[in-house]
Image (cartoon, rainbow, N blue to C red; front, side, top):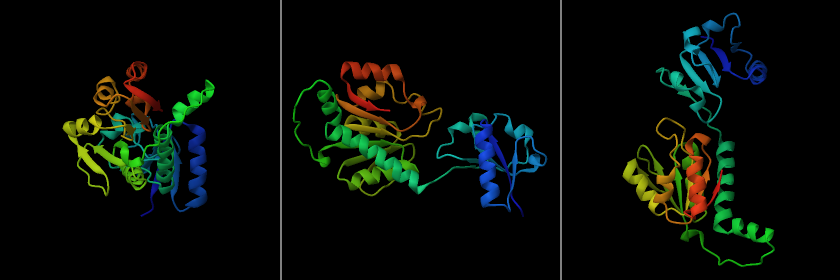
Length: 248
């Protein structure tokens, strides 16, 4: 049976380029743009910020496929439709995320954030060295990206904990779940990395209560969405010294 794909996006230029790539690489697959003749028979919707009522106009869709690692851009209507949802898992992206997070961790670990400020003020000050094993790094979200980052940081010698909604087991990573598990992780975290998906449950999770549960002087690295963060609470935490810094 020949598959047919509907490209559903709010970005016309991106969608046209994506169709050209499909036709070039997989000419045996029928690919349709919204409104094209035959599009109503497509069985897979490849999506990037699709319209909320997509299934009303295209009832034959049997699967929703995100063109990204996340799926929040599909919107609640489609996510709650009961259809299976697929997403991109890319080893290059996982490696790139680990490299970015490692840079952020080292920025705090080796005091590069303070050194940069000192350089601006023409101050020379040498900070004591600290072993990676003395720092507790915690990762919120242990999906494909989160578990790769957590295990990668553990290989560099950091003490690593991870938190997820459901129980996980990872080599060299202390894994926790649930409300009590989150508090346990936060209570001893020097550097907090957010790699959670954005959902109704995680909207605004990076807030005053969470920051205050961390030890004074903690550091935040948000690799998730802007919707995870309550900006005013972060500013308050930075101004008060509850958080030493943040990488957004």
